[in-house]
Length: 414
Image 1 (cartoon, helix red, strand yellow):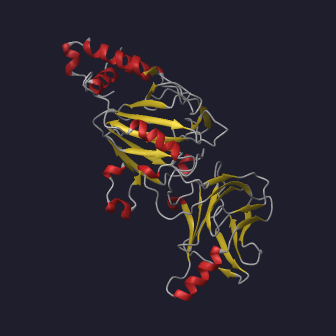
Image 2 (cartoon, rainbow, N blue to C red; image 1 turned 90 degrees about the vertical axis):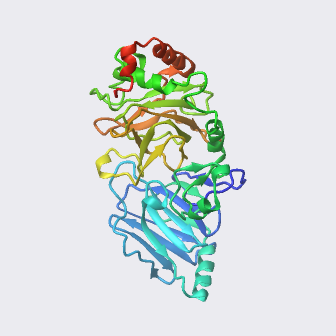
Image 3 (cartoon, rainbow, N blue to C red; image 1 turned 30 degrees about the horizontal axis):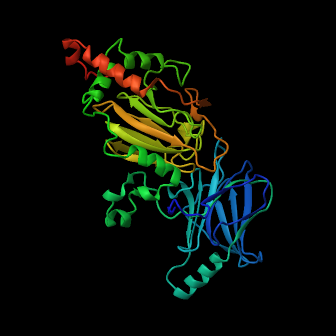
C-alpha cells in the first residue's frame, strides 16, 4: 500500500453504508474495497462507466474467483485455496492496481501480508500491457449484485508492498532505506499520527534523565520488591483481563497529561512490562497510535482481525522492538496485536504509547476490545494506574529509601 503526503487534500478513504449498491472508486482504476459477508457466496463487479468492461469478483467457501468480462476470461491464481471463512470478526478486501496491473484479495487488514489471492497481468508484451492498462484504468465503480455483501470502506491507494512496521525520522533515512521500503518515513505518517510522533520522538523524551538517572532501576526495584508500589499493583491487577488470576497478563499504565476528548483514554501512556508479562490480544478502538520503546525490548504479534477462535487465526507478523524503536497503528493497519516481554529478556520493558482519533472520526469508540481467558471478546476502557508525576516521585522515594540489602537484589526479576 502506498503512503502519501499527510497534507494531501484528496480523501484517502471513505466509510460506506451497508445498504449501498454502487460505489465509486476514489481514483479510477485503483483502490481497495473492504467488506463483510455472512453468506457462503458473494459477488460484486468492478465496472467502467458504461458497465461494459468489468471484473467479476466472487468469494465462496473455497476460493476467490475473478473473471474479466465480457471476454469471460478467468484470472486464476493457482495458489488460491481459500475464500470466505466461518470466523467471527472476519472481513475481506480486494485491491485493484492499474499502474502495476495487479489484483490482490485478502482476509482481515488490507495488506499484502494477509492476501489469499493474487493476479499479475501479462508483462512481457508491451502492446498487451498497454491494452490491459487501458482496461483497468477505465474501471470506475463497484456494483454489488445482492445483499450478501456489507460494504465497510473504500481506500484510495492500492496494496503494493509489505507495510513497514518501523518508523524512521527524516534525518536518519537514507536513499537505500527508501529503495528497500523497509522503513516508514515519519513524514509519510498520516497527519494525526505525525502529531503523536512529533511529541514523543525527540532526543529529550527519555526515561533516565539528569534529574533522575536511576529511574529505570527504581522501576525494576519496585517490581521486584514485595510491598513496593509496582509489585503490589501488579498483583492487584492479576484478574484485570480474566476471571482467574494471571499475574503474567498484567502491565502498568502510567498516564501523562489529560483526556481532551480526542483519544480512547488519556492519549499518552507509559506502559511497564515486567519480564514474561504480556497483554491479551486486543485492538485500539480504530484510533491512530505511536509506540516508542524507552527501555528494554518488546515483542509484537499482529493479527488480521480480532477473532475469539484465536488459536485458529495465527499472527501474520511477529517483530521485536528495541530501545528507541518506534512503530505505529492506523485505523486500518496494525490495529489488532499482542505485546509480550519475552521470558528470555534481561530487563523490564517500558514503552510510551500514544493514541488519537482521526480528525474525521465522529464515533469515538472509547474502548479497546480484547479476548479474555475464555476467548470471549470483552471491552476494556483505557484507565490509569497512576499519574506520571506522582509515579516518578513515588519511584524516587522508594529508590532513595531502599536498604543496602535491597539494592543488591533490585534486579531480581518479578
